[in-house]
Image (tube, rainbow, N blue to C red):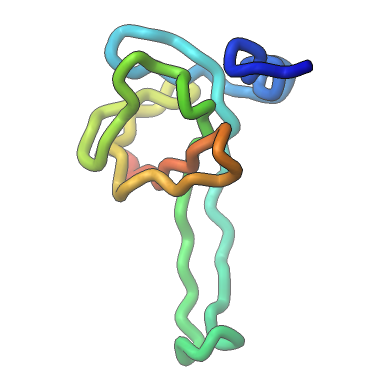
Length: 98
């Protein structure tokens, strides 16, 4: 039976290193793809967003909007509030630091 301590098994094989607050964990990186929102009634708008999925308990204090985070060696800031995926993982939208 799985518990909170077992969430790392889901990122062990295909996860990338995520550094936040001096702590390294693994997360699932989602690179941006164009999403056409015309079918949703938004007039053909395309959006792209890089995101990282992390277990809800990956860090003692989880990242918040505006926080600096390093994902797979690239510096980002958290662009918006995290979205709860399934109660166990959170999806964070990222903005590359230029």
